[in-house]
Structure formats: structure tokens, C-alpha cells
Length: 308
Image (cartoon, rainbow, N blue to C red):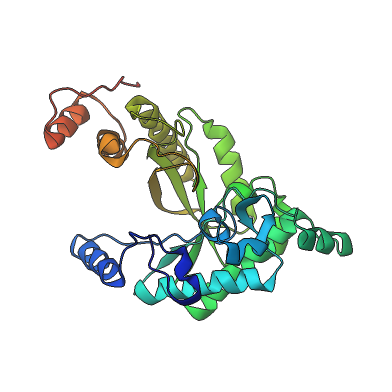
């Protein structure tokens, strides 16, 4: 949906926003006291780029257009060009989300295999090196902007390796978990590992729709309510630790990847969003919060199973 230009124009959807429309969105956000944080994919979820013939040689696996070869200079140059065009339209940003989640087939291209065979690098090293190069470019070229990345590719990387990479000096982590009843203790252990690795600024990421099935039609409100109640427990536990929590991103999935069918659409998910926001605001969802949501939405009933 971004109006890429020049060599990148092939990435633009036929119904992409125009630069003036993006500026209007940014202005409206300021009027409403909202802050826009763009997200641009930079290594995984690159189907919208790598499906095109002119960029297909940058696929980590020839048959699948989802992951970028991280060790090619051309890959980094491509990502830099995408970032520059996005930054040119989005002024006065504080953060830029550079994705970096679900990087499948990492290390499986001929270029990556050759590099791994010649050095002591691992697939994790390839990932860390690429993300660090992208983040370094952002903080160098745009000193007032802080990169954010999803955390899932770091979960199985050792604490020592994360420290050694010094990635924490360049990025902030957005830790995602969309399951209704994830283990709070397990999440705390993961957060503490990141903290010991140098990450002191973090975000959480929940979901208010879309995360329960690739072809979901209706949003199960109770499921997403439970997810947010678990995140509130994590946030409460964090208050005793020296971690700066910037906030929580209530993700609303449209589809699981570029080639998937649509999940439930935004209008269907709005009641769930309202319930989740009230839960985060008040720390609980009871009959009082339900009545408020119904009044705001003009509903007579709201199908929510209360979770005590």
C-alpha cells in the first residue's frame, strides 16, 4: 500500500496510497493525538518484494519468496532504498518497525551456505548481522528514529550471543504472544533473558483479531480478552524490574502472509478491539466494562464469556 517510486515502483499496489494521502493520514493522527509508527519488512515476510522477477534472485530459497538473502550487499541496498522512501514521506518519526519475524529458510541459499562453510558463522549470525546492518543504517541516517523488531527470531539465540552482537544498542524489542493462555512465568524468563542481554526498552504485542485462524470469519472475543489479561499479569510483574515498557501493540491481522486469504475483516473485529482496550485501561473486564463497550458501540448484547 506504500507508493514506492523509481526502481521500487513494481512493489506498489494498484490501489496504493498516494504521498498526499499518507501526509493527510499523518496530519489527522497528530490532530487526534496519535503517533504513527510505519512497519517495513526487511528480511522475512518479503513476498511482496521477492515475488517480482527483478528481485527473485535475492530469495534465500529459490522456490519461496518469503525471505531475503541476508549476506548479499544488494539485499541490504534494497532494504535501505525502501527505508529511505518511507522516511521521506513520514516526517518526525520516533520509531520505525523493521519487522524481522518468521524468517524461514535462513541460511539455505547458495550464497549463505558458502559463507557458513567458510566461516564460524551460523544462521543466527546471518540474521543478527543483517538486522544490525539495517538498524545501524537507520540510526546513522535518521538519528532521531529508533528501530523496533519482533523478538521471535531471538528467542532461541543464546544470551551470550545476543550480548556479543550488541544488537540492544541499535533496536528495541517488540515481544509478541497471541495465545489466550500463554504462561506468564515462561514469558518472564524470556524477558529477563533479553534484559540480561542488554535490552532495556521493550514493547509487548497482543492481538484483537485475526490470530485464531488463517480463514477466520468471526472474532472470538473471549480468546483475545484472555490474551490481554495474561499480558496485564506480565506488565504487573515487570513493575518490579528495571525494564522500560513503552506499551502494547494490539495487532489486528488481515492475513497470515502475502498469499493467504483474508482473516476476519476490521468491522467484525471492532467489538473485540473495544473489549481489549477497556481491559487494558481498567485492568479488568467486568459487567461495568461490558456496559461501557455496549453503550459506545450501540449494542444491546455482547457475546463475551467473563474470565475471572
